[in-house]
Image (cartoon, rainbow, N blue to C red; front, top):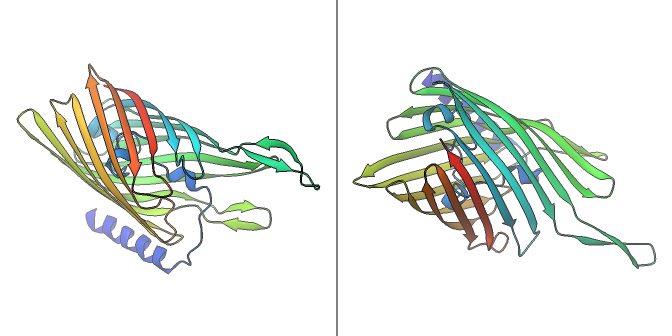
Length: 296
């Protein structure tokens, strides 16, 4: 099983490196909408709020978040719902929904006079299913629909999917798969590839006394060219107070650029409030995400 998995990943990575670089369509589907993982450099692969294959190993969590995305650039206000719900011992169900409202702009007529204004918007909805075949191996599938409205009467969208395999033993979790796989997006006479990527991720949790530490690393090799690499760290005291930090490297046509991240969280009786802040980036500097969730 492991040899087959590594062979498939090697084939996906090799194919991606041979593809011509081009800017991907619907890049907003790669935004990290969790105040927890976004504070850890965007390390999503082993988070149950993104990967349904992780849910049987980590348990249930439902989180709402508000995001002020790239306020100094192509600003948008994002409302997000992420949920990973464990059903029985081996099943995980995943739900995602996001709506973002972009910066308003003025529409001019042929004489150069401003007629009215318009704000672009994006919508993402999806559902997924995960199943643990054994106490240490699972697989998960997400199916999502994303649409973007960029002007009055001008919108485009696509159906896409994620496929993950997760290995979990004690404090170690490792995930491999493909994210945002789907058909090219058509816009007029042109068509564009989705931000499909071959994804690898590793996370390790260990405890010492009343404290805990999680180390995480994710890598995305995008089929449109470019690499995304996330590194994250989380410290917790008594599973109640959390401090997080991370770094994300984006190269080539990676949808998300390079940035650093910081975050805090508190958890009490299952309820958790979390915040993340992105910095060290001209594009994403001062991006803020506030989340409210319940883990059970």
